[in-house]
Length: 266
Image 1 (spheres, rainbow, N blue to C red):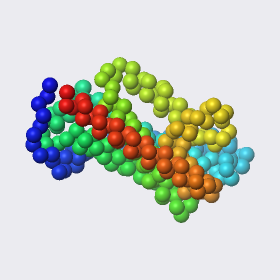
Image 2: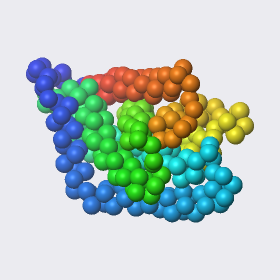
Image 3: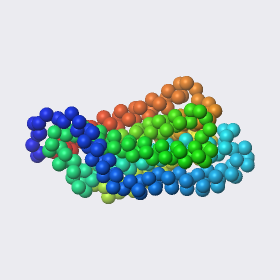
Image 4: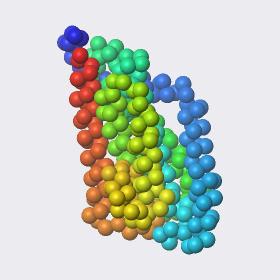
C-alpha cells in the first residue's frame, strides 16, 4: 500500500499538472491545428454545402439555410470529441500505460489537483479548436447573428460536460480492452446521430429522442441555435438546457475526484 504523503498540498498543483499536459500538447501543435482547420472544412464542403444545397432547394430547415442550422451542432460536436479525447488518453496513460499519476502523487500534488489539471488542460485545447472552428463557420457564412459568437461558450459548456463524465469513466476503467470501441459505438456515434445534429430532434421517433434528452450535444446545440439565428426556445427550456450541462460538469468532476483519490491511495 502506498504510504500517505504528509507534505502540505501544493497551492498550484492543478496548474502544474495542466501546464505539463499543455507542454506535451505543444509537441503536436502542428497536427492539432491542422485537424482543427481541416475537420470543419471537410464537414462544411461535404455536408453543409453538398447536402445542404439539396435541402436549401426546399427552403432549408427552420427557415434558415442548412449550413446555418448545422453550424451550432458541428461546433458543439467538435468540442465534445476534442475534450473527451484529451481527458481519456492522458488518464489511461497516467494510471496504466505510463503510471505518471503515481509519480505526481508522491509530490505535494493531490489526486484532486491531478484530475482537475487534466480537465483544465483538455479545455484549453478544446477552446483553441472551437475558436478555429467558429472562424471557419463564420467565413463560410454560417453565422450571421450578432450573438453568434456566444455559440463558442455554449459549445465549450458541452465539451466540459462530456469531458468531466469521460474523465471519471476513464479513471474507473482498469482494463481498456474494449473501452474505446464501446465508447465510440455506444456513446459517441449514437450521440452524434440522434441529438438533432442533422435534423430537428422532434422529427425523430419518441424512443430515439431519449438519446437527445440525455445528450450534452443536443442541449448545447439547442442553445447554439438560439444564439445563432431566430430559433425559438422558451425560458424554462433554456434553463433546462443550461441546468443539464451544469449538472453533468459537477457530477462528473465530483466522481472523478473520488475515483482519482481511491486509485492513487492504493
